[in-house]
Amino acid sequence: EAKQWTLVDWLAQKNKSSLADQWLAMNSGAARYEFNMAGAHSKFNYKSTDALGVETERNADSQVYHLDIYVSIFNLYGEYEKTSEARESWGGAAGLRLFGTSSQTTGLLARYGWRKLTHLETQEVWENLFVEGDLQFYIVKFFGLHGRYRKTMPAKSNLGTTLEGTRATGGAFIEFAEFRIYGDVYQEPMEYKDANGVKTKEERSGYEAGLKLYF
Image (cartoon, rainbow, N blue to C red):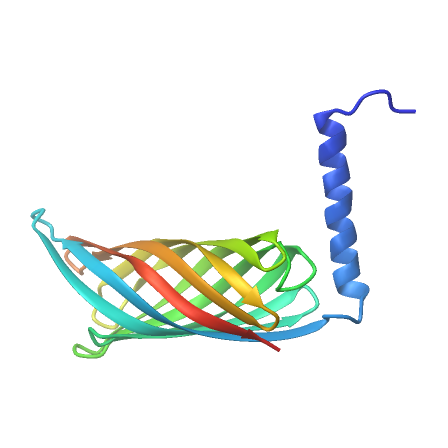
């Protein structure tokens, strides 16, 4: 009989609970297949710094769309964005739910994916791989917090410019049955390096507000 409760005991119990959640997700017929989609409007600020340290700033906005399909603990993800500055990106990823039993419970998701970014005016195109972690935490049944971190791997464009960067996102959401209203803020520093090794840094920071539907 245990006479005291230690941190080691708590971590062991937490690990058992997580494994039980995963077993339930893989073996339960309920919520085995899930589908959700989201649309949002984003406003942001671009700050670019050239090789001489000269900074320029401009504001822009975009339309953003997300799609998620779940089969048990496995996830397929798609995204599309078009900005007012004639930049278009779309991509997809495969993911694994590390804990949590559905897309409307507290959970952690890991993804590995690909994104194609096009500057429509210059027709310069990058195709980058990325890895990301996506965490959501329910404080109460209808309200929670969301966070995501993405690392974009370096890749050369068709014109020889290398692009890499990161993106950190955080926000909150409110749910009404199959509807989620959410708001996120994000920061996305990027680095461009041309064929001569000259670097330009660009940072995009702003917010995204939208609606997500669950099916």
